Length: 304
Ligand code: XMP
Image 1 (cartoon, protein in one colour):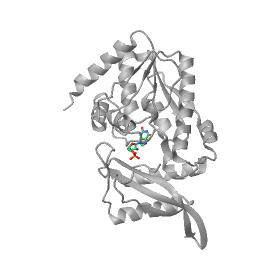
Image 2 (cartoon, rainbow, N blue to C red; image 1 turned 180 degrees about the horizontal axis):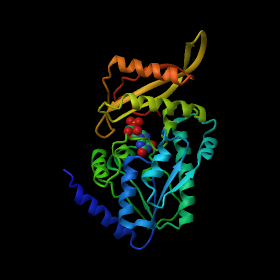
Image 3 (cartoon, helix red, strand yellow; image 1 turned 135 degrees about the vertical axis):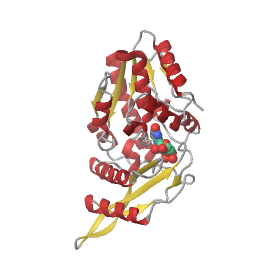
Image 4 (cartoon, rainbow, N blue to C red; image 1 turned 30 degrees about the vertical axis):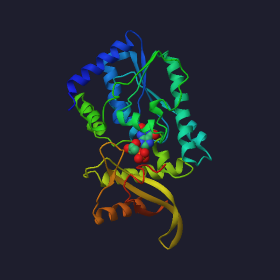
């Protein structure tokens, strides 16, 4: 069992000892890991920490505003990079290529701010399963050094490196982060882009964002690891009397301890039906909704 109070004190000490009188920067995504890490680092070094939140245009609904609110006491820098990201992703449909471009784009924006702030140290919210998964070479996490940062930091501090997700959530509650963050579902670094199969556009990202909000609302009461919508292709439908060629939304809802294996939720038919009706009526571009019943393995949780 993790001794939460001891962990918090040790993490604060570690950050203070490493950063000393220097200053540090952290990429804040709004997920529980980077939020906890930002809060701990702020407790440790206060104003000498610059949290950087990059609005990639690939975030969930309301996320940017929430971050601004929760971290208003810090030296938070919010970068609106939506246009840069969508331009860089134009015409790209290969999953790893998408991840690579997003990672590189992210690092570019981040380095720009590190340069501006003359940051000495990099603080990262890397947790134990990130380290394990990236060792297997399954995918490229940009928070585990998958993307080389050219900027010369004196050192990198990763205070959460030994924790599992449920432990990070415990710490989040203890240090007073709001429930929307401590209980927030994991969200991939490349954001909604890995939940749209193929090329992303501002339009299809908006569709998946709205569908995700509906899935989250309707499955709020369920015990789960993640529940979201993905845009998996196109299919015919009839809306009014007109035949349409619309998007297929897949509902992904799984339980897991650490994301390495996962089981789909057993959701009542009535609830699934309601989600399908809401998505197809509230989002005109969607013609069909399916429920993904595949565990991990053999599937992954995300779609790309
Ligand atoms: P998969 O899709 O590999 O995902 O079964 C396992 C867990 O990891 C999350 N995930 C990511 N998290 N950066 C992250 O920080 C990423 O690039 C990334 N890709 C997937 C995913 O949401 C799931 O919880």
